[in-house]
Amino acid sequence: MNRFSLLLASLALTASVALAYDSPNLDLPLFDRDALQLTANDRDTIVEALNAIGGNFPDSERIDDDLREKSLLVALNLDPLNVNARGTHRSLVRGRPTLSSSYFTSSVSEVAEQLWSSADKLAGKKMEAEANRLSLYLRELSLVLHPSPPVERVRAYAKMADGQPQNWKKHLELQPGVHPSGNRLKRLIDEASEKQASAPKPPTPPAAPKRPATAPDPAQELKARAMADAGKGKAKGPGAKGKGGRLAERMEIPDAAPIKLREIEIPYIARTRGLARERAHAGVASLSIRDADLEQDMELFRPREGVALMRALQMKIVEAEDSMNLQGTRAAEKLVRDFFPVWPGGLVAEASFTSKFPLRSPPKLTEVDNLVPTTLLLASAFKGEKPHSGIMYSGYVEYQDGQPEFSFGEGLAAALEQLGYIEDIDYLVMPESAYQEVLAIATETGELDYLFSPQMISYSSWEQLQELAFGDVSPRDQAAAALKEIYAVQGQMTLPELAKNAKVQERLIKLLQSYPQHLSARVMLEHGGGKLPE
Image 1: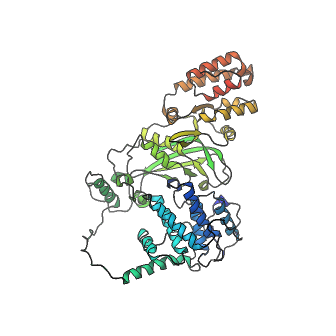
Image 2: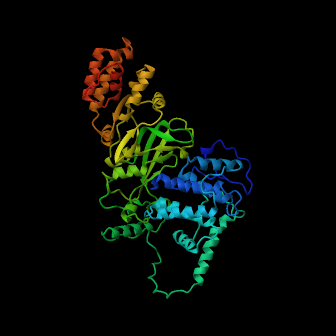
Image 3: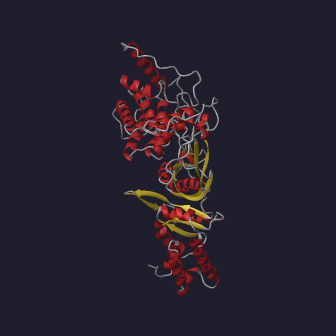
């Protein structure tokens, strides 16, 4: 049986029997939902339709445990925190009656039609890889569930999927010998093929030229197609005969920006979402760039419908195996491409975030807003400059009317406490919007020590964040040194008393006039009743 996701760690499983519901392997992503261009309404509609398969029709002869496992696997990959799908999954694992959802209650045909319609909607967006993958899962479930699926749909699916059902084996323990849904799709495809074979055939067109006995290496072939597509002629050189080996040397992209650093990491406080409420976790965000392997990674570089061939060959960002569930890598790619539009070919960038503190949900089912660190790490790889050391980065970004708005998120006080256990951090770089919450902590506790170790520096734009990571450090360090001098006087007075001292306030004002981003100095000044400089 597959290992079980700790998303539902409270579930205690009894011994399985042949006809039992086996929990899907939710630790292994079925697709990258971050890459899907779905509205919240479209996503919820798909998830509720899938959940209906799992819970709304317990007596349907068309729905067996394998089909329930498949539907909830897709649903919980698309929305791991969906309350209805999680509840249905929990009930099935425990062998208890499911709570019928209020959506899609009339018939299995209604669910099947909705799934096919949702797959068509995905197809209407010039499918990229992940949308194509999700649409095939939805079409398969629709066909298996439908009491009498139109033969045109079966043929369309067979053409899209090369005549085969999807491979669920990595994610599920299927039992086709006892669950008829496992064989139903194959039977539908065979029947559709037989009907098509018996139909009158049009005249046979002239045979296409035969391919050479020894096919060219896939990397060379893809590159040749891409070069021709770009109007630059075909790539030269014979294809390699072996299956393994490096793709980078055979997928050179004209005018590509070179990768100058391959291993980069930065300390980062991430906003996370798992079973529990939103939390902040201090940890390490990293990027490891390697040569792609022809045998293991070729699927990443195959051209997809709606994606230019030359773009398909360029470096791909994937989630590292040991990472938490990253959200925002695609958005980071778009931002970095504004400065480095053409990426080198045949490389794979593995992005990762690991927490330094215990999680309440398993890593793969704990979402991390990773846009900020991934953007910095990609910029570092292309610039050839490592971000300045001694900095803990924080913040996530949302766009309003096309403009970025940076926030810290929930759990600032807990994050500051975590920093007390991490060494070699001199600065906490955080969004300007967190200022009032930092000031509130000082007001509520009467303590100011947390402003000094580490010292807090604010940012409110991508430009300021890039400057903090890669720019001149002297203004920051001069301001920090001035604040350390104030801190050193506390043997004579407490920090709250120092904050109210007129001479100290004068020094804080002078510090802020030269470096207004010093958030610690501003909090100390305002807490002591001083007036912030204009």
